[in-house]
Image (cartoon, rainbow, N blue to C red):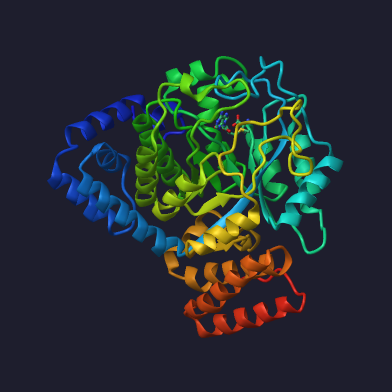
Length: 472
Ligand code: SAM
């Protein structure tokens, strides 16, 4: 039986409830009265239930879809302004004991080169990332209790936070590793991680079990209940996602929102982020072998709908997507993008040779970080390297209350400008510097509180004289 407060995966992600929801959505996909009422509710900018969102997802009326896009754009601006947070993934190890059929790290892949970074190699990788200007990382690793035990992940985090090279620093380490125990989540929390990210891949249990035929990841309940253990372990920023292409997108879309509702119902705080990966070509993986691929229009609709359904939840897009797709969905709700990503183990210090292949998937956006920052600014965004909330203890519900208090423009906005300034001073090309300076000059005026504005101006000035790392 469906119960969003249950701690049992099959109850808070009830298969019957998803099927009922999809049937209800299908029945009402042309019910303009209902659809307009849902849009009216969404325009209050407080979110939608999975049932309401499913109706909009199923509706094919062009005018309605247009309204939906306009609303998503409005909510995006109201909650996130022009800021886009930037991060990079760091692949620690591709050793894996699972058999995920869509991932080249699966245990049966004998021709992929297996590699695990030593602490010295991490220093080289992170130094290369710092030299680009990155301040936030997402750690990625396969699941292998012997090669990548939690002690290894913790050691890597400790190494990363302690690398100080020129003016560089990694100030927030998010972690995307396999579902684990509450004790291990407590250890990750103590190690100072930001968000714990775990993609569900698919919420449809039958498919999930077929897609993960062996290994610890085969256990649907253990995987689906991981965020509850993470929160019990003290991690209050968690990141959800499904891998679009594996299952029917409508099923997974509803499951994703039900998962967000469950976290809100049980822990009083929804997911910090939602990622929207689509399956990509990889070493021995051909995406066309999966029947549920989604086209760019459907992808855009999903992004817009997530934006209006969970306005407080950040949305992440990776370099799995091309520049053109990234540009399109940035408007519709994305708040974080990766830049200059390498999905190979050790690829930042030394790009992979032809013979060696450790990558998880092919990336579609190969631009440098400077090119991405430059591009974002030309599109009217403010690239942000901010890590202030987590460092000031504004995580979980404290972050959500900042969102709800309307103080974002006095906090996130100046923080974005100050971290952009750091990037311009230390890493940017002359052209990026030129545009960035103009943006900062214009945007500083948009800090409403006079006192905050004066302090931000003083900090920006101090940065020109070598000072770093200011935050509100
Ligand atoms: N091993 C961890 C786990 O089991 O959750 C997580 C790390 S894995 C490096 C990160 C994510 O990459 C996976 O959750 C999956 O969604 C995604 N991924 C795997 N194969 C992919 C592919 N061929 N194309 C796109 N994304 C893929």
